[in-house]
Image (tube, rainbow, N blue to C red; front, side):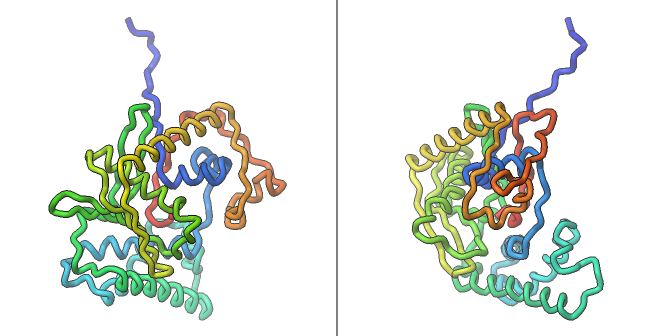
Length: 294
């Protein structure tokens, strides 16, 4: 016997390393980005990261002999133009919708040159003619036994003929101090956990490539590391669920507040958060844009 009521599947509960980091940094920031979906103005640094990521992805689409620094640098401006077409929100950075005066044109030229400088540092660190990645900008996703979905985008996955995996992530900033390495590696352990649960093999090496300072941070995880990461991720989600149920998203002021787009509506700076949406279903992850979420 039917009741006449349409059954609607519950939304999948999902978490990415970026949103997990948001919650650890500031629960209110997590709310604004994930529940309210408030817009944020892209920065020159973030958009440069997106362009550099796109160039490195497409570089590995080429035959090995064509993966040169000159070819990579030639890709920068076309990738910038493609981003302009795909992401209207970046148009305001250099007055892309207006006639450019000399100052604006000079600023854009310098910005494009800075992206090429980062690519030059990449070629100092790795020889792309000697690498054959299994995938670039690989979307990974796995369901945990508690119903939580872990997902993310891996910049590059290298797999040896014998099956060992190396997970590579590009950062266009500088390498962190030793005191902040653990925080930087959380994202990589998150990806390693997802790949382990997907493929049944612990990645042999996690590699963070910092183009801003020309350094590589490497870490070899083991099952104990990934089990600890899984426990941490589950505990984070339990905390997110408790906050959602209570409607309690308190700010956590810190040094990153200076770069936050939402200070005007943050209680820590005298602002008032907007009302929560009338219906707050189980929090779902927004689609991430590679680079802009770095």
